[in-house]
Image (cartoon, rainbow, N blue to C red; front, side):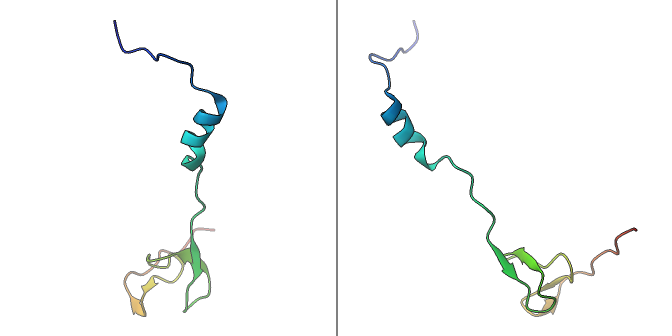
Length: 63
């Protein structure tokens, strides 16, 4: 036989265990060059800069 619980887990105890399972929103900051929102510690997808340097050239979007 496999492992079976000796007692039922109550709603409160289950809720305490799952209290930290929620999703977190991404932390966005404004790009200093183009002022668009971007992820912290990531290159800006609009202008392609990171910490004042051009790290890539963004592709032009098709219309």
